[in-house]
Image (cartoon, rainbow, N blue to C red; front, top):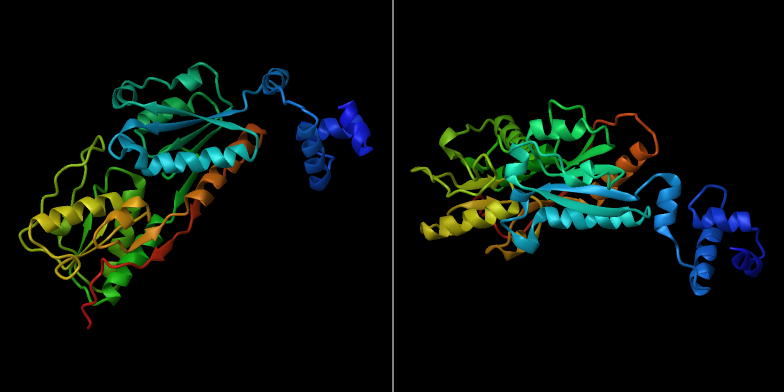
Length: 332
């Protein structure tokens, strides 16, 4: 530090503050000090720092196995995890993922990263059972939910605007001349699916359109595994699917049954993830701002680690409608 200070004509205290991310050094000088430090061969000893400050500089990222076992490396939540790790790197933290099996969730086994004291805080991505979430909450570790919320537990959460997104999406379908519109998704599976259903429901009733219960089609079992779609005898002209991957599978099912998409039946998704472009036709959908959601969750858990106990409730991150080819214009 003395060598760096002499080279830049600053005090060793200033160099120490810059390298330790402490207040009192301007951002321009801080960057200059770090650049010179790297040029001179300085290596940051993260282990020594963590021992001195009593922190691991790790954040645990917990994901249920069911969310990633179906889609392999293309899983939506693995992409969300990538965004979280990127945001953590900006604050000199690391993300440690732990995948929780269905058995561990049912048996209420606390994650190893918590029991082994390997992390300073927790971000849970994707809905899990309330009993299991309650066990994690009792660890008194800084905790944030990402992409879901729990009605029972008082835990801060960061979610996409599922309600308004689905409301806007359904209104677009209605504007294209459709009146008979169904919904695909198990509305009891996650809070986001329920919110998307409620957005669809609001759009229908505000446009004075009736909802046929047989057009609400289940897509998954209680443990999150996809199931075959049970199509009604009388089909609507359009469906709102709770996510792009389900829309992709649903279109494949409809095609096997002889329907032409979107001429016979229009289908829309949600997320604007990989399946939106893999689908044929490509999906009209709502783009979820995963980067903003991850950054907001990281900022929230960091504030808690730093001792800010104030609750912010639910942070809702807006998305945007993406128009593609899966909705037929019946007004032409």
